[in-house]
Structure formats: C-alpha cells, structure tokens
View: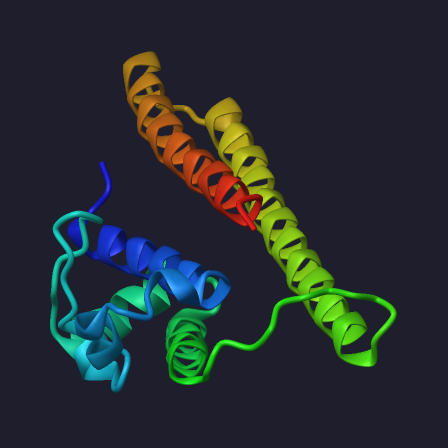
Length: 176
C-alpha cells in the first residue's frame, strides 16, 4: 500500500516533470504558478484531480528524502525549473537544422530525451537490485512458509507500484 506521503511526493514530481516538458499546458494555471514560488507553497499545493494532497514543508522535505533518490534537492530543482519554464516567454519551437537556433533546440530536446532514458534506466537498475536482494533474502530465510509468502506478497505489491511508476514515466516521456 502506498502511503499518502509517498503519493504526494511521486505525484508532485510527475507534475513538475510534466510542467518542465509541456509548459504551455500550465501557462494559464495561476494556482500552480503561485505554488511554484516557494518550497512551502509547493508543499501546500493540492490537486484533487491528480490526487495530490497538501502537507507541511517539514513533512514534504522528509518524505522527499525518504522516497526520492535525489532527495529534496531533486524536487526543488524540478520546482525551480518548472517555475522558470512558466515564467519565460514561449519561444519559437522550430527545429530547422539549417539554422543555428534550430539546431540548438533540436540538440536540447535530444539531450532532455537522453536524460529521461538515463533516469529510466537508473530506476530499472534500482528495481532489479532490490529484486535480487529480496530473492536472496527469501531464499535464505529460516522463517515459516507463511511468513515468507506474506513477505513475498508485500514485496510484490511494492515492486508492482515501482514498475507501474517507471512505465508511467516512460509513457509521459514519449508524449513530446
């Protein structure tokens, strides 16, 4: 079962990533723009449609450290990048490779895609490492069969969530 804290962090991170990659979708969302102005405002951000609930800044920071590989720094960088994207005027998005500006836009887009693939691969390698560790733990355990089965089911549920999150991010990344 996913805790409210973990849900807040992962869904907020997903939203911030989407804002960074698709800022035009959020240009008219003044509530989100206000929430990006400070760490505390982001912690207080709630969106029932996305399932994001508000929390205190301390809870937000603690949960970020607990559930994100990059800790609170990761989500704060995303917040700042999202704020920057929404504050900056939209430029022409032509990727005409015959011009320097078009070539730079294409290179930047390809770099963002490469970064997403690297992050996806990193997440998958963490999941594989956790799976190997849990398999070894279950194989060498001296607990009863029922306890091992219960541990297996808990880990399986946790693993399914992580894999679905990873696949969701992959689908989001393919939208642009």
